[in-house]
Image (cartoon, rainbow, N blue to C red):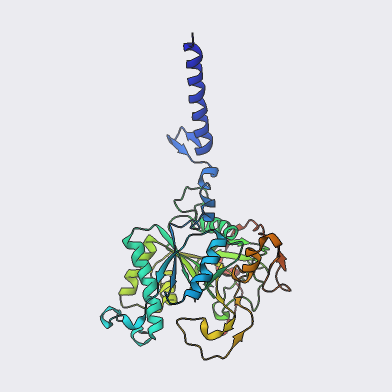
Length: 387
């Protein structure tokens, strides 16, 4: 008696599963004999940038074990952001045998300080681990890295931009940032653009988390030329293929990029770590993408300035009353108490309330949707930079 209804139920269930698959994964192209992925599917992993590793397989933080103070603050920042980090111990350059230091033709590592040499080696160790363990991609940060409380929202729009630049908007990349990149220079103090090339940009206009154009924009000699009207804007953030980068508070590197970096640094081209990353992006054939202004900055805490860097020995007598982080508007570290005492609903403050779009926020803000633009080399105006 139940056979007829049971058959009908099975047919209905099968039909529902088929339609669900069809709607989720696209339509069947009879001419090509294949499934055509829908735009929805191609973007389905976009929001993986908001997971515990920000869309990468791992997050590594380079830190000397002796700097427990820096580790304390980093774990607080990671906790409030909802990310999982793995420590990689810093290296004392004095312990590196001379035989292990590559011979170089210029700016020899042999003549640099032990601190700079150790900094270079820890980043090479991270690249080595990525290659050894077959890690698809990793975010690498210094232990003084700082970011906006809106980082995960920022990364969604950054990922839209990297997909556009890689021409993968309607494809199904394995990485939420698209496939085929070697490095994503997320934390820097200046990156030029390629003014002599026709190229794509992703432009996020009126971004409340972007520092205004002007003296807040990092290292002047490394600022990009954003003179074309489609790029210009006081509170714009752009994503592009950089050159001439400096500093590395944070960067992502793919497995292919790590292999390329290690090989390049062993072939008589070894240079201090940020210049090694610049070589990857500029001279070693790597595909690198970056935001400007930066998404990750270097935090300078209150107290003696000499406490900050473990690489450079500062002679300054500066004693900071409050901390600061260049180019990060709603700094995570500078708003720790607002995050800790959330029940008090304290406003999250901009570092430059009189200059940014919003002087303060409650919680997070929505990052505007960006757009892709194409700029020809003839559109750039002269952009003199200081030496």
